[in-house]
Image 1 (cartoon, rainbow, N blue to C red):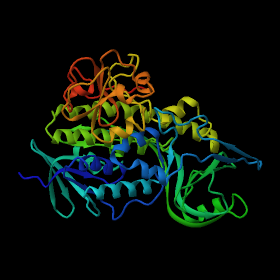
Image 2 (image 1 turned 180 degrees about the vertical axis):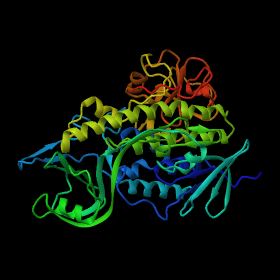
Image 3 (image 1 turned 60 degrees about the horizontal axis):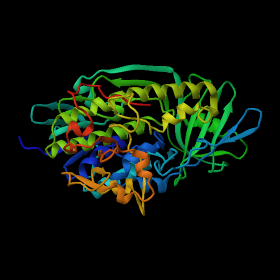
Image 4 (image 1 turned 90 degrees about the vertical axis):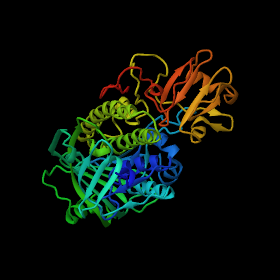
Length: 488
């Protein structure tokens, strides 16, 4: 049966858009379906972690996101006795040659979505809105997405990135294990207001152990509001928002309410990320607490991991490469669920200042720079699966050179023959100050293969494995679901 497209992506949040972008920029046909009439306008994931900025860089959106956001927005906490306290959200964290992004980027999710849509349009792909998928079928050759208008869209693969209430997940019958805590609630809203400076993230202690958070969104007149109320029946309505905001300080006035909702703590994860030709990613596969900004970032990194692997298989790589998606991302999602839940408990128990006062270890984990797919968790030094650090290379950097190709080989101690599907860099010729060698610590004659998602794939003195194979990802044995080990 003829295919309408190579891959159908269901859901046009950041996760779905990044999957589509990874495929489209490599020349594959992709169709993006979204059930909503328009992109979601409210505040959800308003922070992009350093590692996410790194993995988005080859897609061509990181520079624009950085231009539209801010890395520095200190907390200003207002206590009940009228005193104020200011703190750096990430004290001591500064960029280094190996880590160009040291802090989370504050940027509204709607802006991130806008940038991703615009980039996708440059690849010739637009999102089809009001396109509701009601069922999914698959056979040995492909998948069929059935829409509510009775259309049937045929593709080789399908990605469900359609959120926590995923239709695709339900159609597959995949378990979504976890729990919802109705007693843990916050009012979330996007508002415009007058009377507070936009150079701080303002937090207010409230009577009864509640707190109010007001974070100004860069390059926008809006604020992200979060209210932890001692009233268990607090409502996300106009009267409540006016009462709370207008009453915190003289001259602070709520001007407009764009969106509001009650958030309940919901922590769940699927038992499978892949069912034959259908894959789950982002909130369709795991839902988190918003504390620490982990959900959106984990979803985007799902998307990058899956997107390049789908593209490789469409180009003829072995199908076993797709098994590494679940093997690598499922343990990461489980670890991040635990981290975000721990951050939630800390913030909700310590009040308005909880995010700034979180333990240093939690703060470091939240940056997601230590996530690894290594299969040997105890090996020393940089191993296959670890993040590949950046390095200055004369008037350029390793990250900038990696934009030129999906796979990159660092060849130490002399040139080497070309590697099919990869750019080969003469590491010693480029490494003018020795930083690259000090960072990667090669043995004599070693070659290091960097994957499309910026993790080490292989290192050794023998023949470089064929790109697009599981051997190029450091796997030497038969894969089984969940075999990857995330290192924190």
